[in-house]
Length: 160
Image 1 (cartoon, rainbow, N blue to C red):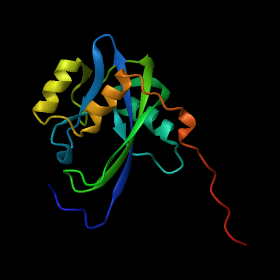
Image 2: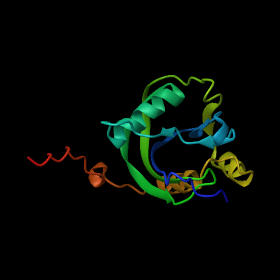
Image 3: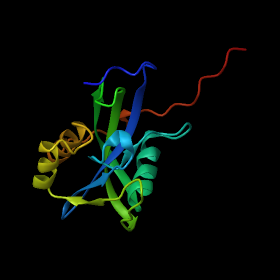
């Protein structure tokens, strides 16, 4: 296990379980820290962006697909990843509403994987996190949390 990041970082991630008849959409990540492992389309929210907006944007950037978020599948926390930081992943169920699958240098493989293929990737240590299998299992079991589980708030006013 990697040592803790001295900055004490805990990252918020927003990802999507996207399914079709062929399976679940995964992306291969080429950045060195990811080690060419596979992940759900996911990333960090930008300042001023809601978690749902971040999940939609990340899906577009990483896959070329336009998606619409349906519900929250779950929250998955890893206090210390193998990469040396903490992460809390908000994973949503999303459906494709447009676009077409596109690969990039950062995501050289973007495709649907069957459940057995995903299990094989997990056995080989080729998934970026344990949350991937768990979120897909939770989605298959019909776990549905309403989107308003996460309440979006305006900034609190500064004292006068």
